[in-house]
Length: 402
Image (tube, rainbow, N blue to C red; front, top):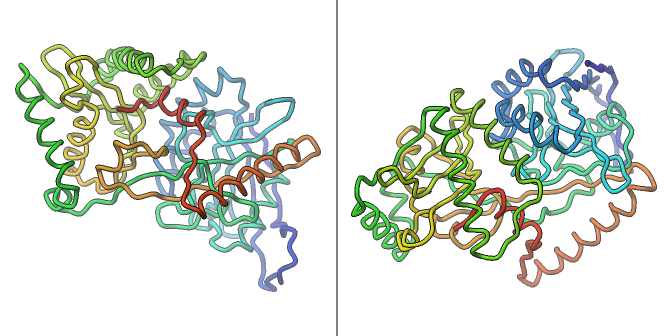
C-alpha cells in the first residue's frame, strides 16, 4: 500500500535567525509495501551515498525475516525536492509497539550495525536545513510516542548526515571501528605492530601445515546456505564455552542471514569467505560490501586444537588481503571495542543517537536517554569508555568474536 503526502518545508523550532532565502518544498512518500519500493530503493542506493547496511539486499532480507517476526510495520520514506525532483533522503524505518509506546526506529532491532539515511544530491548539509527536513519528516510520518534513531554515523561517504546535525543527538554506546588502506598491501602490513605481524605469520604457517588447508571465497548460493548451519553451530559452541546465553529468538536472526546470502551473494553485495581443511570448515566470515567498503557482519570458527592457529584472526586477514587485491580499500570492523580489532590498526568513527519524544509517554524514555548520555560524557572526560554489557552480549550472539 502506498501512502503519499506532499509537504512544504517546515522550519524547526529555534531561536536562531532563519535564512531569508527561499526554502525547498519537499514531497514525501511513505511506502509500506517493500516489494513496491524495491526498484526505487535500489535506484536511491545506486546513485546516493549510503553504507552497505542500506543496500536493497540487506533491507529486503531484514524486513522479510527479523522485521516480520517482530511485528514491525515497514515505513520506507522517499523524500524529494518538489521544484527539481532531486532525491533528498531515503529512510528505511519501522513502526512498532514497545513497552506500551508506539516507536519509530530504523530497520535494526540489534542486527544492523550502522543506521543512516541514503543521501540524495539534495540532502541538507547544515543544521538549519536539517531542522527543516526533520520537521517535515515528523509531520509526514505516523503519530508515535517516540522516535528512537540509534547508531547513526556522523558522515556518510564523506557527506554530513543531516540527522546527526540535529539538536539533541548524543554519542552512541560505541563508535564504529574501521581502517582505510593504502594501495600497497605490504605497506599496510608494515604499519602494524611487529608482535601482531609475527602472530599473523605464525597463524598462517600453522594453518598451512594442516592437510589440504585453503582459504576460499564462497561463490555458490547453495554452498553458502550449507555453510551457515556450521557457522551457527560454531558460534553457539563458542558462546556456551565463554558463558553467554543464546538469544531466545535466534531462529529469526539466523533466517535473516540465510536471506542475506540468498539475495546478496549473486548481486555481489554479500561476501562469504572460509578457511577449510579438507571437508572441515575451520573459520568463516560473512560481510557486506558496496564495492568500495567491506563491513564484517558475522564471524565464526572451530574450537579445540584449532584455537592455537587463531582462526578468527586469520580468516579476517586473508579476506582483507583478497578483497584488497580487488580494489577495496576500506574495511569496517563494526561496533564494539574488542581486543582483536586493535591489532589490525582500526580507528574509531563516531556514531550518534537521536531520541525524540512526541508525547508524554515518550518523555520519560527520552529523559532517561539524556541522563545516560550525560553520565557517559562525564566518564569519557576522565578517560573511561563504557559499552553496556547487554550490547556486548548481543554483539557476541549475532556477530561472533574470537
